[in-house]
Length: 183
Image 1 (cartoon, rainbow, N blue to C red):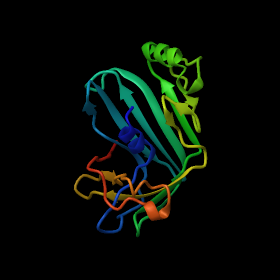
Image 2 (cartoon, one colour):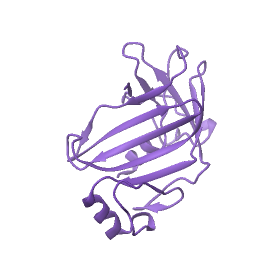
Image 3 (cartoon, rainbow, N blue to C red):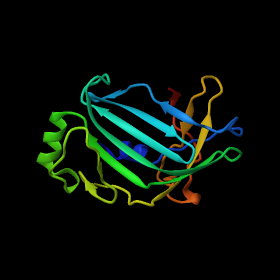
Image 4 (cartoon, rainbow, N blue to C red):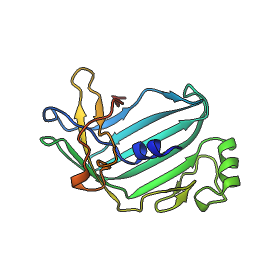
């Protein structure tokens, strides 16, 4: 997974020109994101006090053959006036969804783990996974979000060099083009 994909998976945020109409709740997801022979679907689940994001990576170009899930969850706070979305990671998990992925993860000892099993997500907070250091439990993110009235979708912030969301001062100012639609 490239650095930009990791950043997008780790930090999601957005900007709106007006306050959010209502509290955002439920499941939102992207359409199939295709590129370079692989594909992905990103989902956001807003519960009463917890936000979970799951990125499912597919080994084909059209989101038909799931390879693995990468999920982040923890408490969040959404200010509907400022559109600030702040959250902390209490769990970051990686799970293989195919025997082929299990074999590859085990062969590479991905995240230092050599006993991966299909459909059994593992906690990877704070670990080095393929050269990427996964955030520690408790890591906080400072984001923004906007709701699109035309289709009830939401957009998250655009991560940049000076707007990585790792502090309130580095909160993104612009939003991604990527939309998450109600499911």
